[in-house]
Image 1 (cartoon, rainbow, N blue to C red):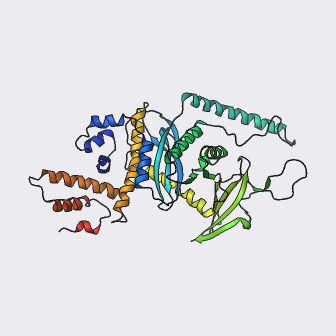
Image 2: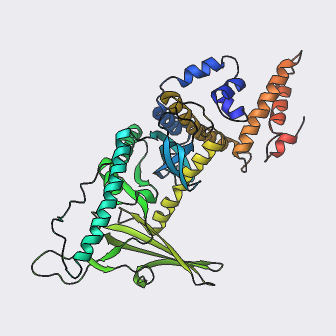
Image 3: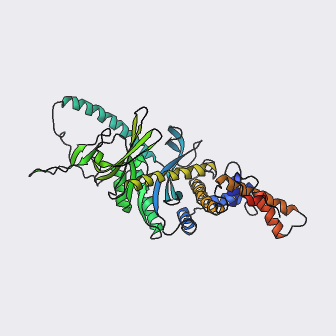
Length: 432
């Protein structure tokens, strides 16, 4: 850990050994990376004893990150869509579950697993894609033949929306959620899981509810077909009517408006209502954020939702915005802790490299919390500069024929360790 805090350049096993102290040879580092380590237990114990605060409010967040990787031998190598590049790239994908503090607005990664597809799943996806194209052609032809007819197509039956299609992705996330909830136990009360718009569907909602009883907070498509709950008079016979009028995003009734404010020439209006979606098995707590440019009169909107009908609009928006803290974790892990640098290709060393980089994110949060007591503006660059300067000072003091007394040594180490920092505390400039 000390090598990672001190080193510069790419974070690889060879780089760690070069910055390691006595006992940290390259062969020793290789042996450590070849061991199977309980990273979920390690991360949770560290977060519980050093970062968790009793009485604070926490939510779970889940997201996927893609690491570009060259070659052909890496375990799980495939093509995954990268939002940074805007296209599928060759690399590795990892899904992470993180504990997010609402008051501190910090994310602590706890559980990471690699996303991989077997050859059977790849072949099944290709055949499914071909089948969908054939069905699309057949459907368009059937619609032309059925033009003017009404009613449900023949053979189309009602489906139980609580019975979902368990894809490999949903099964993996379900097992991760169950494992993490069992690991945390009663030490931390969690009520919400926040995920991005990729999981804004009924399958993901039912998976979360059935696996953990947590409430899902996610995002719907901007053109999602939503319906108000029907509150009119019902028929005496036949099925009860559920769906009322369809929601028009350009003319939302004012009775559902809960807040409005203006920043410069951008007016923001927030609406909240209990809405039905024909693809979902249960009603949704929907919050619509509408932004209007008062100069050009252009309009844009976002549709957030939760399965908790009692959740207020302010908390729903706040919780969903906290999901982006996990993106900051991925950024720090790639920029400072080697998530983009590891050269491992086998499964166990690769897993250890990824989990080590995200564990260092938690460790840096803990160290920065202490450093910011004296310097509120301290950053990760300041933290690494401090440990690197400390290493230089200690190695230099060890070369002296006669070591100075402990007070002078501490002052020298403190001053030299602060030389490369961007935000330097004033006490670092004092020489007794």
